[in-house]
Length: 509
Image 1 (cartoon, rainbow, N blue to C red):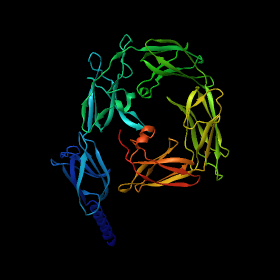
Image 2: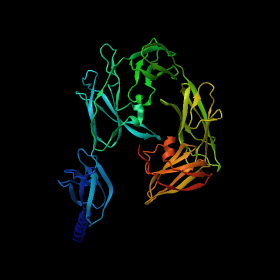
Image 3: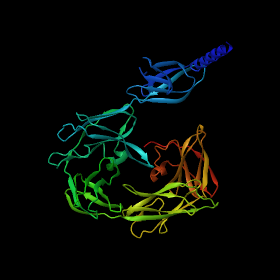
Image 4: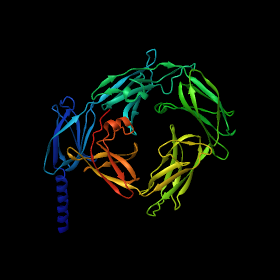
């Protein structure tokens, strides 16, 4: 009997605790951030992902939820025509109602229209890319944000857009070719070409609803044909043309199979600059490649001579220089080389006592850049040379007799440590480290404004602090001269350079 009473007491206590845990309430309002008008029937969710309370705002934009689990909760608000809002880690103390939480919702921006041909007829199945102005690797440019396919009426629509700068580009999926094989549709961008960057973009404000019809003009294409030599008789081979323009590469790549007699023909090639790539393998399963530039103009290209060969092998060594006699732990890394149209090859590196050597095979001669993964701390890339010339961050030529890459890692680095403040006191920030005008390292300062960057090679640096990195054009010298206010520090081997920074607000474009 006593056991039964005890169990009943425990169960009653557990029930009381679970009930008490859900004795919190919160109320507030939902308004338009632009007009401050109340928003009716906004869906308000309060709680955690697996334990939440749902309600809607009334005609005055007011809402209230009760019996919410106390503690830190998320408040999420959705309404058609507005951007979704989520507030995380909102504190709900037990037995203390939270009143007057105002949620400001921003109206969505919308871009819509039709894709038509030169006769005004709709083009169904056309692809429309929405390009957004963004800072990418410190350079402001345009980048694909999202895409849509036109319906049977040639219509497209982009909703739920935030304020920003956009470019719309339509293409007919690589070309809509008529039966005679002589006609395709060219790409159309609005308001300007993609390579015009932010200067060619449409400035879209919150709540903007715009209609943009895109008319694709017919264009005459050419074919590119020729002969591939150096291919084993029984081996397959593919050739493809890739636009040299980085943005255009996202939308198009034209290819063809090479016949048994070595001939190939790539049809419907729009005018432009391309790289022709051919690939096969020999009987020893060695990769055979060719890479040649092609300029497609107003007439067909016939008789192109493409010769396959194994290319050259890029060799290199990695040397460890340790002032403390350290040896890197076993750690796999990769040395890669790349050129403007992508990574050309790489080799895994596994550290051992004497360093290591590596080989990147089948590399087509040309100009490349070294891509070397960061070694395990406390080591850093000390130098990278080819024939005694520094190649870290610069192009180098690959070809017969080019020599061997020499990579040196060391452990005599120091650190940069400091604090960031603004008018209100300590401030979180994005920290950017620059050496000789080139990016070196970046980090985040915590909520108290403190940061520390370890394993920094000795030398002189400039340190910057910004509120956000999305608008920082650190690779643009003119932008940095106008907007950058850095502090110079000297990093000594094994020492931490101390610095105090004033947080900056990175201006929008």
